Length: 361
Ligand code: OGA
Ligand code: NI
Image (cartoon, rainbow, N blue to C red; front, side):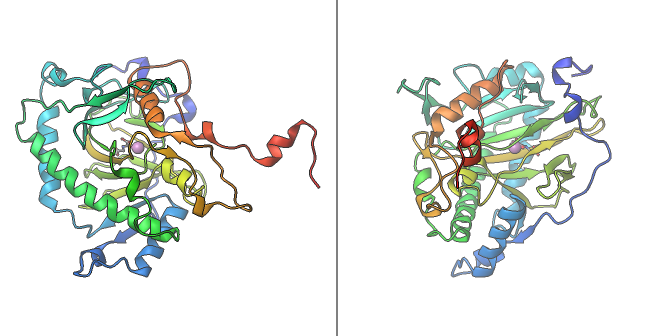
């Protein structure tokens, strides 16, 4: 990636500013009460989570119960994997049929990202629709592709995934409670989950003012739990003023962000937040997101308990598997059309619907 290929260059309005604004006020939430013997979901914590989801859609957690050595082990193994020559990494490369594995051609909003990734599915095999066609009921299976080197990568990933799942379910319980729902309200969606983990490597980039590690986007699933190293580069778009804010690395903290699906389920009580990754010319960066996703057959729509006549559903129902397959294919290569987004399922406001000359009294 010596010279910057035009495929990586962002449109001027999406280029990063090199003067970074460090995060002020991104909530840092202490989960230590969850590790107490009675495992209580105490009211103060529920309120804190609800507040963070509403105001930011993004927060960090500490004292989360994930052993530090599990994180260090996967981070170390990821470094070893990416340090290999390209031809080694390509032995486990992703293609049109095997959609997990190594690749370095991801596009976000049709601009190439300055990164290489290794994707693994958490439940192997994972079942997913074979095609985008809504009438095609054929189902594909995803199987992981494990590299020969480093040999400990597989076990490190599998152990880390178990820890992430425990944390993810605790967070989903807290989120459910904060919306006034039973703590287990979301549980059923994850029986045949399509959750995956990504190992990200962002090499140094000679043009950090033109390219991005990951272009602006929102995460499509339910929830993301991200481990970032100490280099920094993740930016979130602050809801209050639209300014891009750098999320300062906090040792052993996890960054949590609300995905599009929680936005739909909660009928926009909580909103997913746009974020992106800046690269730098000197230091490489590593990160590991865990994307909590439901079963492919999940029909995503605002929850009945959270909608009523005064607060009608803002989204039409959509099939997660078809949505996910569409996203996966379009991220793999440059397309001439916009990637699928939840906004495509948004129900127009009444005032827009009435634009054709109708009036209401
Ligand atoms: C992502 C993402 C952030 C990071 O992969 O969706 O937002 O810091 N990654 O790598
Ligand atoms: Ni993301």
